[in-house]
Length: 452
Image (cartoon, rainbow, N blue to C red):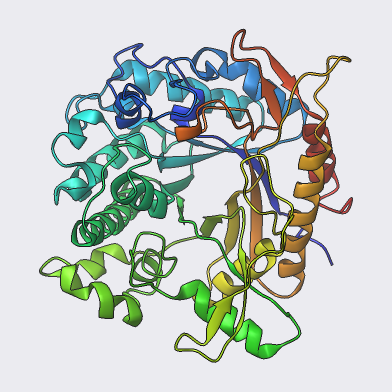
């Protein structure tokens, strides 16, 4: 059977990770610009001031996609590049950059998929409380309105927010990502609610301002994988574990940050723990939060095996054996995550589904022959995409796959120590070298996955 004939094959990036030009053409500081200035926050003491210099080299990057058959490009917009004060006056030079990028994509036959928010909040808004401020949904709606008005004539595919789980869990709970705070569970619940409300407001603005718009949402969460797929008890245990809201933090729950947006309600087990922290009038807010979505996406890299157990939860995690394969980042390699995650998500939400990020960090380098050979990445992508195809063949409505990432880039708190790209970037010179995996991915796109 394979993938549908109109399957969407793409590659993804994020503004702060690739653009550089940190203070050019009127852009203000983001929370990540300021976070990088703090000692010991970035593993290799680097920053995003230059990154891949995509701001100046975007045409080269578009041509690389064109040459390898990538016809869908997911990118994010830098909020402080568009609205340096967070709200108010529009920075025309920032708008002009994304307008040039979008025009260049369309000239090369590449469909733009615009992510409104991928973590680079204007620092000036963080000084007003950031996502904890109850005005954030209004600010986010204003920002979305600018993108809709300036780009909606050419961009029809929008993703509202990338990985709200990481925004809260890493940025405001663990403090390992910008803005580097460790807030109470009460504050985390409020931030989740503001993120959800901002998503809803953005959907309303896009529907109002963009003709023929398609809107999606990109949360994340490691799927629970049945230890024994042939055992119905293990399958049910995994399903339960995947959508459970734990009593430690709401931040990394799949259901807490998707059920309100799609089903119009918070999960019951989550309300038991966190309902007391929701703001007054939260029930009414659900009418704003729950908006029509055209597709639902998730960023999925790894999962954990789960089996049925005779305990209060009804399930238990099965530890991976010693020596289990891992990426250079140390993440376990679990291809079945791309079968069971999409399958469970399709069963629960019944929305056309896409993988908005999947890929791996490898110990890549330019070798003596001048090329970058990355057989581990090819094997990883092969195994994972084959599982996604299995989910499609078993009835889940799978519409697309975006590989993370087009380019090696600034990997947040890990700096430049992790290489996820299909294209190798020499950060000293900016030179791009396509990896073997890009050639392999081009063939996968050309054959619509028949080479798997």
